[in-house]
Length: 113
Length: 114
Image (cartoon, rainbow over all chains, first blue to last red; front, top):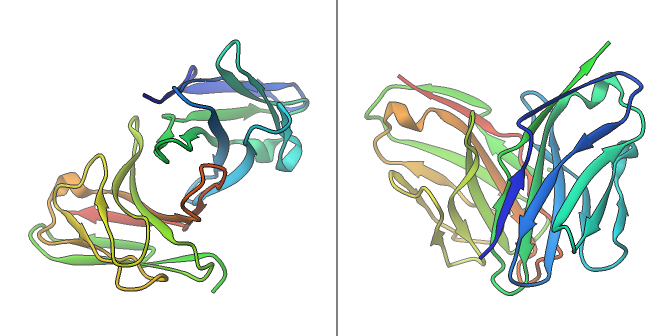
C-alpha cells in the first residue's frame, strides 16, 4: 500500500531564510515522487520529480529535494525564500506496480517580510 | 491550446441542476483524471480514464459521471448538483503506463452549488 504524509499543514519563514517542507512516504515498491506547487486560484504546477535516478533532484525556482530511502522521506528545500514562493505545496507518490497516484494533503508556505 | 483547458473557470449552480465541466488536452496524453480540491482534504480523485473508451472510479465518484469518447476530451457531469459538490475541480492528464510521468493540470473550475 502507498501513502504520503506532509508533516506540516502550514510553514512560515522570513524572506531570505531557508525553506523546508517535509514529506514522508510509504510504498511497497520503488516509488516515483513529485512535488507540485499551487499558487492562489491557480492549477498545480510540477516543481520536480524523483524517478530512481539521482537522489538529489533540482527543480524550478531554486527548489530541490532529496530522496532518502532509509528515512522514507522526500523533503523539499530552498536556500533562500522569496515572497513569490508563498503558495501551497503538494507531495505526490506513485508506484509503477499499481500506477496509483497518492497526493499529500498539502503544506501552505507563508513568507514573512 | 497549450496543455489542458478547463471550462468554465467558475460557475454558480442551483441545486438539482445538471452541469458538465469540460476538459480538453492537446498533448496526446492517454490518461486523464478529475480531482476535487477542498480545504483540509487536499485533492481527491473522482474519476479517471487510462485510455480513450475506458473510465474508472476514484475515491469520491458518487454524484459524478465521466466519458472518454476520444483522447483529447474528458467531461465531468453532475447529474443533479448538491451543495456538497461545491468545490474546485481540476482536470489532469499524463502518459499512462509508467509512474515516472508527472501530471499536467488545468487551471481549475470553481463550482458553487446553492
